[in-house]
Image (cartoon, rainbow, N blue to C red; front, side):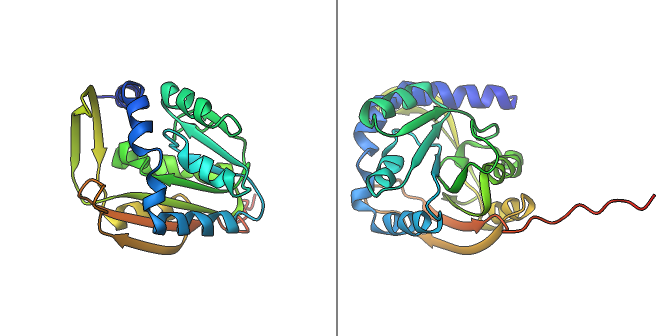
Length: 223
């Protein structure tokens, strides 16, 4: 199946579950103190710049950041998710877009977070997605990525009573860390935790990386 067909399946599936997803997941940060701490640390490192929530779903993470004085911008592949986010949080900016082609200018953001959004990418798509994330970050900008640890693909066809067709890709930590390095990021921290009682029973992995402050200069060939 082609990459475009994969992404279309993901978009349609999230369009289908958008309202139910918001009802079930929209207040999840209330029970996740570690996630809140990581988001607060990321916001502090943004240096006052805007923070991108990449794969924002129902917009609750972007809204949590905005409530704390951060200029947050949510981006999601699903038009229905974006519509639900705008209805729920009209003061926050949301944009429709793909992780492989982000609707943002070069260096627009001081930091970015991608919580369980790269799980819908194939392994070969990780590096291009991270290159794109690096593009929209300012030099020195931090990126927090969360994903499910492992080496399997789970296909979901029924989600909370809705008919869907979406794959969840689990990745070994070093697979994601390597793709981030190849995209030009410097790793600063990694963390793994067990699932919370209200979560799916998977190992949760977090990587905090940074775009270098100074980009390497291109060396011109001697004529």
